[in-house]
Image (tube, rainbow, N blue to C red; front, side, top):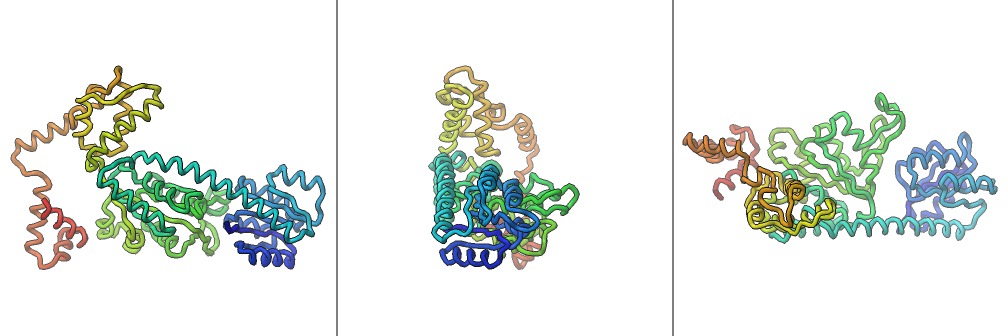
Length: 453
């Protein structure tokens, strides 16, 4: 495992010699000559900090306190020519990994770094094992349908790459975030962070600071530096859910991360903070149409659109519906301390025939509600939420009845007739797209859908 090292030492000759020594051994080494510079360079999230004890303006113990305040798990090795028992004890109390006294030999230093590297490796393996257990339980993704087998296959393929951006498209509740987690956990980024953020759930004014962090004084209330999600997830994966709701100004900055592998904190210098992350984005909207309406950057769309996975709605997953229902019964048996054995025949038919507009999330909530209502060994149709018992709401049924009585054709038929009429009077698809106010790609897709019908 190649370690990244940050050396903080005011003696330039010694610091540079350590840098060359460790660099020659394949380590990624950065060097800071002052405590202040060292604290700034902590933004690179080194595996290990080699910290000198005696420095001007701020001694090593003060620097150690500052590092541990922001990064409690950071491994710091103290080094000094002025070592004594009191300093050693104090540094260990503050969380130093080890204390080494100058002058030390190359072998002594490498032995300490090797021990620290072993600890880092063990921690990463423990995290990986924990994640591997979760990968075995695919939750929303469980299923044997053809549609889901296609999803699994594509997820496995892209997980084998390291940097390929992924776009996941699908209706709300289909399991887009769980798919993103699965890609992360199947990849070599699994030992590192998976950070998810819902772009539609955070106000525009806060979203940028959440993603990129900020420096003290960047805005009112910014009292100390905050690391953003891209920085926190270095070497890992960032999942941007509902990216179609992200403001255009922020879309440009996401594009910069993808192209330059770096960003600037709010209020920070115009110097890129480099990060190594995979970006996975998701949306329940037709981004193609948003691009045509100038609501989504075309360059970002093409950058994210290199590898697309379409999550099928639950209604298109066949017998997966019942398999998932039984899975959720087992789950809630443990959580609710129940012993429900399954579904009776009527409940089985109702669940299988329902269209599930809210997808797997709606199914899970429906099973939980039914199990709370259930008084017997099997969930009955009377235990299910009203919308599932009847296949639709009473309001929807009444609207449908009124619509049929009116003699009007269905909405899709009206829409298709209108599109075909416009196409018939235009010389090109682009001309039709301009008249209809949609993109040419959308016209192509609609033509295929109409022909298929």
